[in-house]
Image 1: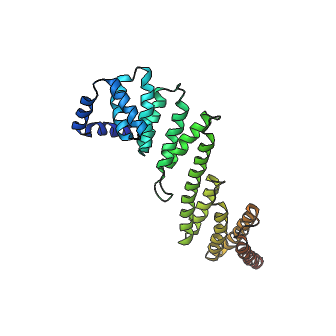
Image 2: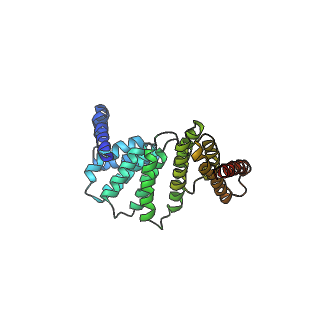
Image 3: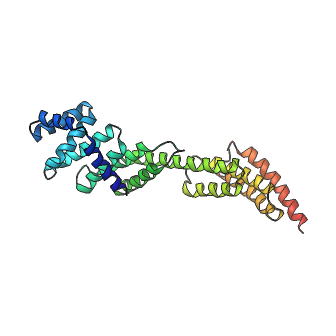
Length: 270
């Protein structure tokens, strides 16, 4: 589906370019070699949109030659440097498909993932590009374990996972704040499973203590004991996670009260 969308975009781009510009370019450069040199000059001067236009025009003329590989890479890189990250990612992937044995395949693989990373929006927006970046980064990191880009790739992976964890944390927090305690429990638990090393584990454990205490208070009698016990269990998890947590004093107060109420319920049930 993504390939089809980009194909449509490329066709649309070609169809909608002003005809007078195309004619002007054709008249200015008498040979493909002259156009190639002009494209490289635009690229080196930072005029990436002009460079991309010329690289696109000459690539079909060089596709079967040794220069074709370099043109396609520079074409993709021109889009990236012009901040058109989705088009750049598409063309870097096209480069990998066409030239999988190239010495620059490693760099193209990394840059395709980096383009999706750079296009990843704020945590509260749709995260499709974040997932695409993670998918491509995983492929890159596994394919090139000794790459010079490994450290940067791992850093981008951590950043993306923390962004997704932040999104999930805020969803769970919304459930808690609106009194949807069961959904909050499920959401916080899923966050632990999906992002066990995120920066939101400590806060999530604290809110689970509060969530289960309020959940127990508003539960039917047959569920209160079990849910007060969950308060204690999550307080213990928070303490094990960080004995110096800033949330621990309040969590221990809630857990102590939960234990009292649990014990009273158990005593009355005998």
